[in-house]
Length: 170
Image (cartoon, rainbow, N blue to C red):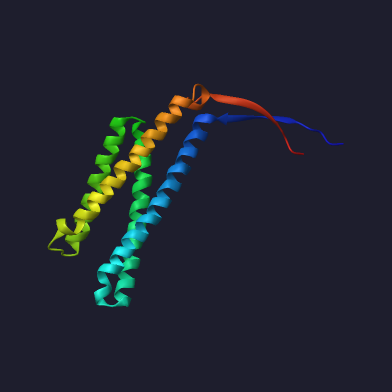
């Protein structure tokens, strides 16, 4: 004879919403990183073609990989900082500024260590494009956070927990 019992399952809607937002920003970051890798990898290939196809391919792979990693990590950090500071315009601005300082100092330090004589000319275009990307990414997070909070009234916007009974598999 089989005995069927029920169990109470606690659903934390605030936690589920946070996980959903993390998945969305990760997918957004992956898409942006892939696009960035293709663009910057292609640019590196084009710029280095004069040194031969092997050099162009190598620099393309390095630049594309670096761009992918930087864009993905920047997207995840921006999303995390924005969420950590709260979903407001001041938090978006603070996230953007912190990101800019981090990216600029990292790029500057790498070029300084490499002995570059034209550091600002080397990192300037990428820094400007990266800053524009960061602003657009944060704007999309801010816009989606505003739409979600306007559309939800109740447990989805708080840490209330809802209870439901789900049958236990036997």
